[in-house]
Image (tube, rainbow over all chains, first blue to last red; front, side, top):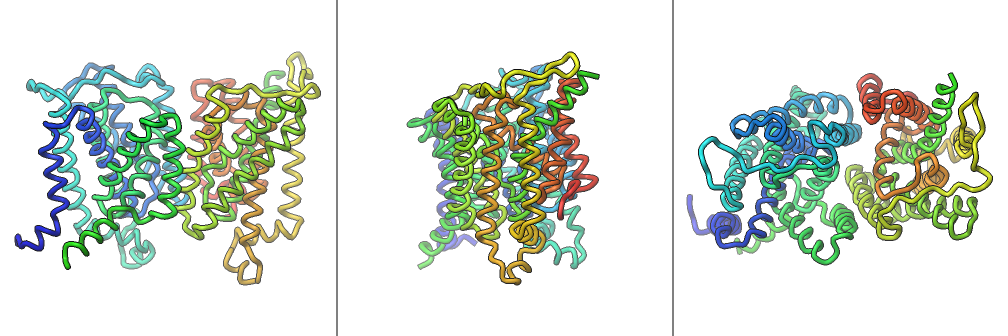
Length: 318
Length: 286
């Protein structure tokens, strides 16, 4: 029911949506590029939010799953001359899902702390493979010269048209994740996050539920990877390792775990932070990043999005 | 046969360096239930500081001491400012150590620059002794000897002193230990400081084995240390030593005979151990 109260309550979301849809044609390439990156990493952060914020798994390998899809796309295009998006994209997502199946199987055998270590390890494994398998992965230089997606029919690609493609795909992914979270499955994985033993006592197969949610996380991470390599035209080993996995942790901590919007907000904050800090001291960015990470964990643990949401709720309903 | 013997000796000297960093990591893991991801950078700081002091004063021992103490101080700062304030929030504690990796790595880059620094080998330890018709560097022998001495000392501390007993009790059941009237907070702080110092010592003395110190050493070596702790089991000196010897020797022989697979051999061992015996060889609990 479209009441005035409801409209007011959802106003910020509507404003942001309008901004994302209507502004880009008038914005410069730098801003549109930044927005594209924010949305792609927002999607990747959403996968971590799904796996950790909703299911409680301490996954440190989202960057690796993201990288598997990106590299698969790049390898298919560069080394095997397969350029059709209808082939590269499903293959890449399939690879991410397969790797997630493998990693999840190994990692879920142990408790939370070891799960973190194993996902960390497996992520490093992907990084090492990308670095060492030079004939296929391009070694430390990675793969470059990746064009915009080839759908089979001619499209005049530009940073704007690609931005809209990214936006559409990410909105679809967001809606899918949202549906999953609201479904009985989604509720049960949140139950696992809260108290796994109780869920087991209630008869749920918690291992299978965790495994499936980890794979779902891997699937969408793969989607983000595909979007990224077409955006960046290249992929390198450093982008698929612990750095990216850690980056999405930072994003959901600052943005807010357990709320898909927090991932998007966190991504925007981090991207803007990185952009402006790099203007002043590009070499010292890691120190700033590390310090912000530490401060966020200590003082901003719930994330900014829940605080903003509560603030707006109070403001909009006097 | 000579090549095997030298390979073994090189593996053991590498293992000693790994032991020195794994010991501290294993202690915090067992005692606090967290993985101190910044431990590798603490090790690296020990290396950098010892190098600078040794070059300035032309005194290897002074450099060693300086590196050890500096690493201990860094570890102490990390513990006091962040970890102690996040009592029992394990994920958060691990995350802050991750943040510190960035801070410390970039700080060392800022101070010491991007170029790798070669190790400082004092007169006394330079040169080589011969095993058969191959040469074995004296400083590696020194590393093995000092590593074993320190391992022995730490083991004695763990098994034969009251402090060690308290630490072990804290690892097994912190609540019960507290219930017996033992205040674990200072124990944890001391263990953290001590573990960081040992890592610093390892960083200072291990540079000739590692070929020098560079900005990514902290991150690279952390990874190996984690595998050592997984394989050997966390929470005990024997675990750190056992895991270090296994990984050190396997890694060295892997590099000698299968250079392409060098990195993967360690991962594979870790994954096998995790699947078969998650506790590790000498681990206390999963």
